[in-house]
Amino acid sequence: MKKISVALFLYFLMVVGAMAQTSTVKKAMASFDKAQVYLNDNQYHDAIGALKEAVQADPGFQNAILQLAELNRRIKSYEEAKTYYRKAIALNPNAEPRLYYGLGECELYSGDYPNALTHLSLFISKYAGNDPAFLARAKKYKADAEFAIEAIKTPQKYDPINLGPTINTTYRDYFPAITADNETLIFSRNIDGNEDFFISKKANNEWNTAAPLSNKINTSQFNEGAQSISPDGLYLFFTGCNRPGGLGRCDIYVSHKEGNNWGEPFNLGAPINTAYWESQPSISPDGNTLYFVSNRPGGIGGYDIWKSKLNEAGEWSAPVNLGPEINTPYDENTPFLHSDGKTLYFSSDGWPGMGNKDIFISRMQDNGHWSLPINMGYPINTFNEETGMIVSPNGSTAFFSSNLKDGYGDMDIYQFQLPVDKQPMPITYVKGVVRDKESRKFLDAKVQVVNLLTKQTAYNDYTDKENGEFLAVMPIGANYAFNASADGYLFYSENYELGVGSRTQPILLEINLERLKVGNNMVLKNIFFDTNEYRLLPASVTELGTLIELLKQNLQVAIEIQGHTDNVGNDIQNEKLSLNRAKAVYDELIAQKIDPSRLTFKGYGETKPIAGNDTEEKRKQNRRTSFLITRI
Image (cartoon, rainbow, N blue to C red; front, side, top):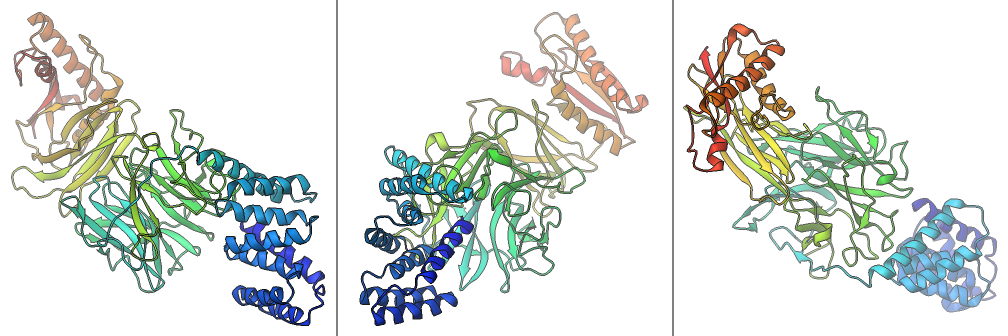
């Protein structure tokens, strides 16, 4: 876009330069010559003033009119530019075709779509040049005009609400980010040219007055912005520009929250950051994939969206371009991956839209590919530039920045209800604290959530060292294994069945881990068998892995693996089934090199119920596999 605009600008200057002596009015020529001096110094506004004087002295001075058209287009004063383009075309019915391009672009960028379609079509039919990129841009503009004309006929419901004076100020407030529990908002604020982060917490469903985030992240010398907060609120990825030790003009940094304080940010380094421009990070809900924007070589357009994955060694992989499923030969910006891990919102001026950058939505398919991006529609998108939209964890509310008429200052943060068909997949989350059962002290515990069907880890991190807190997102539509573990403690296990249509209310837990000791008995919530069968199902792998890790880290521990059933059926058959199920777990542990001398197994049938047997839900609790610590 910039290259084409500059090319057209220079083209008109060249034409005018070659034909400068076309006015016989001395005052007009004097003003015109003065304008050229301003142009040489890139003083566009002064040049426009001089050119207006030239046209006032000679209303038929076509070259001055052409320069006024192009200069106003250059500074995005599109209404003025349209006036002068039309005057230039009126003075010469056989005008150079590029005037129709310039006029059409200005009409597109000011929402005058029918006229834009007319003049861009004229340019395409008349253009005889040999610049394919230029012609492609004109055809793209024409497609935008056609799209916009249709989009306006079916407007989306759109009622933006200002977040109010606790968030917005007379300064520029923009680029919001929000945690999965919808309780923490972090955004950028520009005060006298310096960008810093501010934070607000929600209380009684209202945002508190925003305060500076942290003096370890905010600086007075450098700009910090374009941030992404991890769903649990513990990691802040952001863009830092021209900082000491940076690899390029703008790099991506991360800071980890410890208790109520943020740690010193550090540069993610290569291969994410390069000598080029890296910015606008968006972290996936599992913390393992980072999406960002870069103009590095190897892309499809000027600015593309890339991704990098975190490997088991804690290193970021070589970034991969999202490819033509998302990126275009033009620019893509401000990616936002929702907490569902599958819905991507981003801005683009390459996909069919309303003219400038529009916001689009794409969804990850089952095969791992992105769906064809869909324009968010009018009037969410307009002829203005729309970028930087994020969506609340529950998927119903979108947040964005704009300078609408009811604002408090330069730019404010707004919210609006997202159309249902543009909402992400529903999610819920499990949130809580982990403590020592006896001392009640907070524990530095590992928390893991695994999708039992795909075996993909949805969350794998440690609780906050100071307050024991964690927050793990779980998209609706799958069953999950949950466990929390700490050195020297019996781990905690739970299973969450979150099929399509499940309730999305958050799960709040207080987990009290017991120190390892003889007599500890624990139900393995994620050991699975088919009905009346004793072959371990593949979904049991996660839980078995946690048990194996416990035994390998505590070589003195010996356990009895126990099988249990409900009271349905024959007592002898139930005892045999429970014994075989316990042995299946025993055999798997032996296969994983656990010393057999540390293991025994026993089937208890229906003799040790932990709930009644009068309902299916209670019988389900009784059908279980557990283990008892017999030696330590």
